[in-house]
Image (cartoon, rainbow, N blue to C red):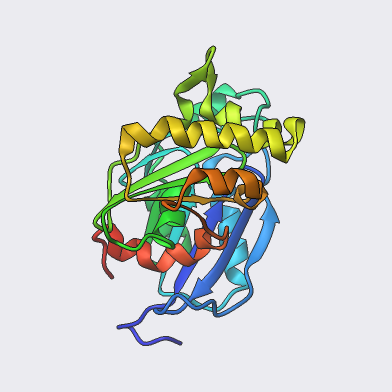
Length: 257
């Protein structure tokens, strides 16, 4: 077991289609292969906790946990989450009872209690960003998966979360809908990549970043032609960062154990 001064971290990346987890040492090295299970639906908070606890039981012991959850998370409390309030996952019907269960749910307190270790809960893109940012200048992270995730860092410090994915981009279509997985599957990688470029170029004058990181499960599907046109200040990063960021997230948010 790791000494108290260098805790092992259970890192959990909760997505719309899958939940991935592993345990990392203080250097961010995986101490066990990452485990992935399909996201179960319907998914009230207690069932998410049950799923995470079950995954953790098969991994090495950890002294703290970092959990990334989709949606607007403030101080570990869910303001809104897009997928877990639905009957059977993304783009299915929203169930009023799930909407009520998730709204204002202190998921950080819930998981701290269920896991029995200090737990940090952030937006999943923020945890992803913690695994890739350099800590210099203004760095924006966009994750391309079920929808569009985002996180902003200034000098390595995490800025307040903004749900840019819910803003309209074209004729009432949100960014989530515009570049999310259903549209990638419908359009194919080439046309979808052009949409990604349009999003990036639309955000460029808004943020004027020093570096933009494109991550998430679909980032690898961006075509080489599109990547060449995005510029040297745009970098594609591995999806594994959603787990690796579990260690650095504690420092970048000013949280310590």
